Each structure stands twice: as C-alpha cells, then as structure tokens.
Figure 1 (spheres, rainbow, N blue to C red):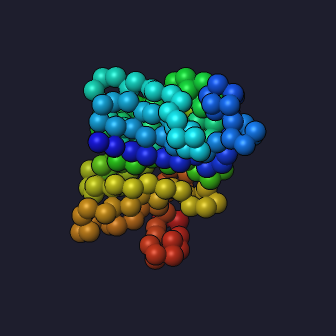
Figure 2: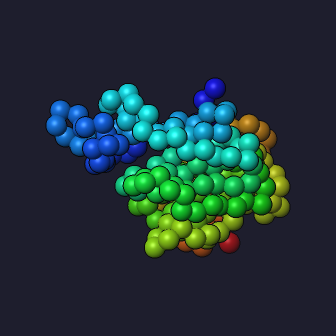
Figure 3: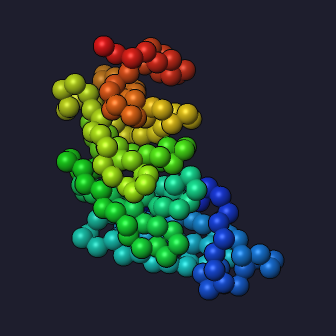
Length: 200
C-alpha cells in the first residue's frame, strides 16, 4: 500500500525523455511522488500518467512522509527509522542523508522560503538549513525531551517559526512552537491563532 504522497508545488520544465515528449507541445508537467511499502519511491508525470523514475530506498525502510521544496529543486523523504533522504529533482540523485536520534519519523516539511527543512519524530523535531547546502541546524524538543508524541510538523507562512502538533495525546501540550534561527521554544498563547510570546 501507499505510505506517503506529495505533489510538486509548481510546474517544472522536464527534458523530452522524462516528459514523454511534452504536453501540447510544452515541456511542462505536474509531478507526483508516491512511496509504497515495497521501499520504493515512484515519481509520476501526472499530466501523462506515466512513471518517470523509480527510487529504491533499501534497508527495508518505508517512507512515512514526502514533500517537495517550494521551488521543487529537492524532494525530502522521512523514513520510519532514524533517517531522512534528500534527492535533487534534476536527475533524482540522493544528495543528503539526514540522521535523527530517535526513529519513527512521522512528518516532514520545508519552510515557505526554502531555507529550512524539518522532520518530527515522536517527542522531537529536527531542523536543517537548506542553503547553500543541506546542513544540520537544531534539535527541537520539550524541556524534558521525552513527553508527547508529535505527529505533524509545519512552518509558519513567514518561515520564522516551526510548529509541531500533537494529535495523539491531548493530555500533553497540543502545539509546540520554535524559533527557526535559535531553536528556542516560544509560548503559544492561542494555538488556534498562533499568537506567540518568546519564553524566558
């Protein structure tokens, strides 16, 4: 079965071979990335309904989350173990492996400005800078490191904060918000409006 799916954000130009000759004379296509329980990521030309790339994951690792960078230059896959994989989308070569201390990656995201990417694993989030190259930046966690099971991660629209959402155990804090530059937690006074106050 399918374990993760992601649409490209824009309509990138593809070469003639990858695009099957183009659509209506134009070398453009929407891309769809799909991972399955056979440890394969398939890249589809959604306009033509053709699979243009098979990416073997190996190590018996299913991808739990897929997402494209805002400019579609990279695809991020977060594995169910302790790693993430970043591919460039020109030739679909692996350009970086991301290592997390605890496994069970649940979700992944790029910031809207493309400067950061994040993966959430159980009670921790992991943050990397994307420019000029993908490099580790910060671990995001609660003070005791172990409370909560955070299943979703995203960025605010201004790319200044990363948000981890707890959808499993409502006895823990449902939303944690961190400053992306410092990695420090900020208090979320109203999780529905994300009114923020820096914590001392």
